Each structure stands twice: as C-alpha cells, then as structure tokens.
Amino acid sequence: MANFDPKKHFDEKAKRFKDDPVRAACGSDHLSNECMTRVQKQAIHSAIRAIGGRGGFSEKAVLDFGCGSGRWAEFFTKLTPTYFGVDISDEMIEMCRTYHPSLHFEPMDGLRIPADSQSFDFVFAVAVLHHNEL
Image 1: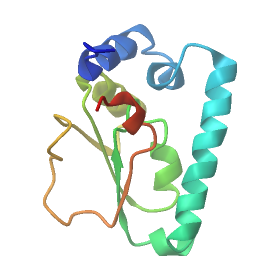
Image 2: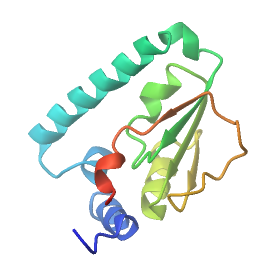
Image 3: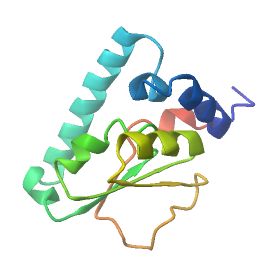
Image 4: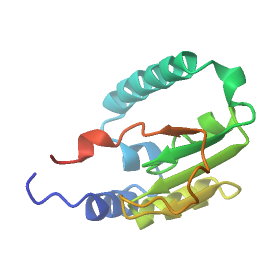
C-alpha cells in the first residue's frame, strides 16, 4: 500500500462500477457491502443520537466528507435540507451528480474543502480514514 493513490483508485472504481454506486464506493461482493452498510448506518445513527437526534439536524448544514458515489446522500437529505458532498475522485463526483442531480457535490484535493469556513454544522466522514496512510 506504499504507493496507494486514492484518487486514481476511486476514479477507476467509479468507471468500472458506474451503474452500481454501492460497489463503486465499497467492494465488489454484495454480502460484504450489505454488512458494511449496516455497520456504517449503525455508526451514523449512534453519532446522530450523541449530538442531539434527528431534531438537531432539521435546520443544519451537513458536509459528507469523502462522499464517494453519494450512497449516503439520500439518507442525510432526509435529516436536513442542506447537504454538500465532497470527494477526491472526480469520477465519483460525476456519479453523484448523475444519481442525485438536485444535490451539491464538488471535487476536493483531500486537504481543502471547496466551501467557506464555518459553512457546515456537522461533518461526516463515513468511510474515509481507513484509506489514508500514516
């Protein structure tokens, strides 16, 4: 993993699985993806409970940092009308825009979020950290 390039990796996955946003963002095995989705959803629900429950989101802005193919976009937009997704992969961002044309997605370099400071009340990075090297 010494030469892992996340942008290249996820650009290639988005091209390969352009008709399947879950496989593009996760793995190619359906059962593993179902398990991963359940675990991630439970973690998101736990975080939401810890910061005040659904009512705390109704007028808040949420940043989905590392949104991938946008597979969590619909979930977050049920909580808040203000959703913004960013990802290092241009191809994943195009996939997001295809599947969720009414939502806002932007590419990022992984270090700088393309938005004004203090634009968001909550930031979620559902499946990002394990792709980074120390």
